[in-house]
Image 1: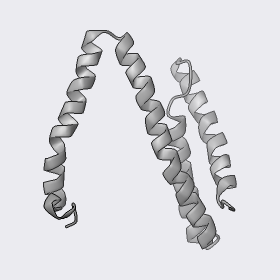
Image 2: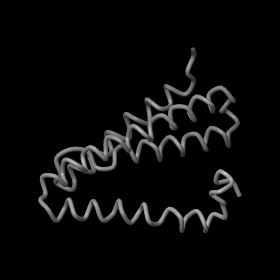
Image 3: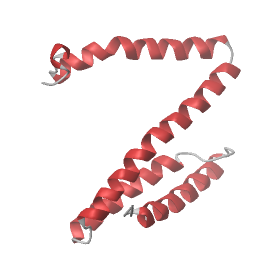
Length: 126
C-alpha cells in the first residue's frame, strides 16, 4: 500500500520539533514546548497552500488526511500519559483537580449534544 503525503508530514515534523525545542530553550524548559501542535499547524498550512496553488492531487490529500487522523489520537494518548504521571506525582490536589475535570466533561456531554441539535435516541444524528 502506497501512502502519499509522508514527505510533507516528515518535513513538517522536523521543522515543528525543531521550533518546539527552540521555544522550550527560550523559555528555560527542558524538553519540547508545543512541537507536535506546531507540526499539525504546519501540516494544515502546507496542505492549504498546496491546494490553493493546485499542486495537491487527490492521492496526496487522502494520504495527508490519513496521517493527520492517525497522529492526533497518538498525541492525545501520549499527553494523557504524561498528565497522569504528573498528577500522581503532584499530590492529592492534582489528582482531585484531574478527577473534577473529567467529571465535568462527562456532565457536559448532554449539554453539547443539545447545542448541536443531535437526538441521542436516533443515534446522535440531527
